[in-house]
Amino acid sequence: VVYLICSIPPEQAPPEQVAAWIQGHWAIENRLHWVRDVTYDEDRHQLRTGSGPQVMATLRNLAISLIRTIYDDPITTGIASANRAMTRKPTKAIKLL
Image (cartoon, one colour):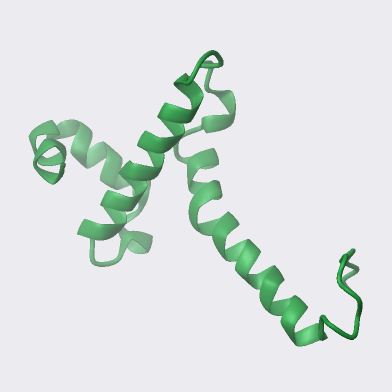
């Protein structure tokens, strides 16, 4: 059983549509935010002032996007292992940019 709070009246939000919204939300959560939280340990990052946090989040998103673009199957390759591989060969990462 799942309970939700929705500001749209039930007549305008059929259960199938609400389920699609929820699945879309979790797809984003699992695809991007989970990677940023777990792989990059973003929650424990200590940069807190100025535009630094926003710049670092943008750079992390760029890194994730580049990895997903160059690897045929980033799920099996893994974002973390791709990061480690590029750390060992920084010229490869520079060529991507």
